[in-house]
Image (tube, rainbow, N blue to C red; front, top):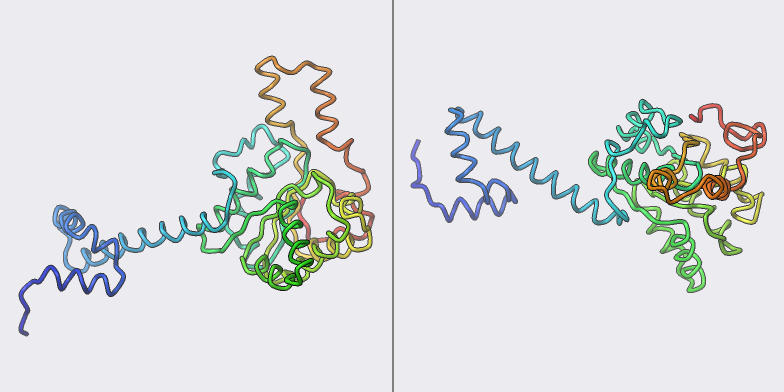
Amino acid sequence: MSTRAYDPERLDAMLTRLRLTAIRERLDSLLDEAARGELNLREALAYLCEAEIAHKDQRRIQMGLSIAKFPFVRTLEGFDSYAQPAVDPAQLRELATGRWIANGDAVLLLGPPGVGKTHLAVALGREAIVRGYSVLFTTATALMTALSQAHARGRLDERLSHYAKPKLLIIDELGYLPLQPQAAHLFFQLVSRRYERGSLLVTSNRSVGEWGEVFGDPVVATAILDRLLHHSHVITIRGESYRLREKRRAGLLGARADGAERARGAGGGEPARSPYGLPPGLAPAGAQD
C-alpha cells in the first residue's frame, strides 16, 4: 500500500473539517503523551478520541450553564446536609441521576427562607446539564412578568413556547412576592404545556396548601397542583436558616430577633392538613416527602 508524505497543513485541515478541535489544538502534546505511555496505534487512537470527547463535553456543559442563566454556582457537594437533616441524601443522589427529568416528573422544594432551596435547585440543574438535559432557571416574579407582558402584546404563545422548550424549567421563589391577578391562569397554561413533556422544579416558602392564596385563585391553584403532583418528588426542608445561623455565630442576632425572624420566614408555620399542606385526597400516592 502506498503512503503519502506527512503534510501538517493537510492534517490540520482534515481535523478542522471533522471538527476535532481538541485533537487539532493539542496534537503534538497528545502524541507525546501517547508515546511516553508506549501506546500502540489502537490505544493511541482511543486516547485521542477520549481527549476529544472530554473537550466536547466540557464545551457542551459550559454552553448549557450559560443558557441556563443560574444566578450563582452551587453544587450538591457544597450542600450542608448535616445542617438540614430533613433532606435525605439518598433522595438527592437519586435526583442527581436525572431519571426524574427523563420521566417528565416535577420536583417541589418547600420550606422557609434560607434553608437551601435555591442552592439545591441550582445544584440539581447543573447535574441535569452534565447529563445532557437543557435547563432554564428563572424566578417566579420574572416568569410571571414575562408571561403577563407577552399576553398584553398578543405574544403569549411565543413566550409559552420559550419556557416549554428546555427539558427542565426551574422556577425559584414562588410565593415570596404577590403575583398579578392573571398569574394563576398564565401559570396554569405553562404547567399544562409542559405536563408529562418537560420537568419542572419549583421552590417555594409556602406549603402547597397555601398556593390558592399565592395565586389568588384556589380553583386554578388546585388544577396546577393536580398536574404538578401527579408525578412528583416533594422535599420539605424544616431546618434552620443558614443566614440566621451565621448571624447568631457572629453575635449579630439576639434570641428575640432570631425567633421573630424565623417566624416571619416560615410564614407563620405550615398548616398541618397533610404532609404536603393539602386537603386530604389531593396529595398523590407516589409523591415523595
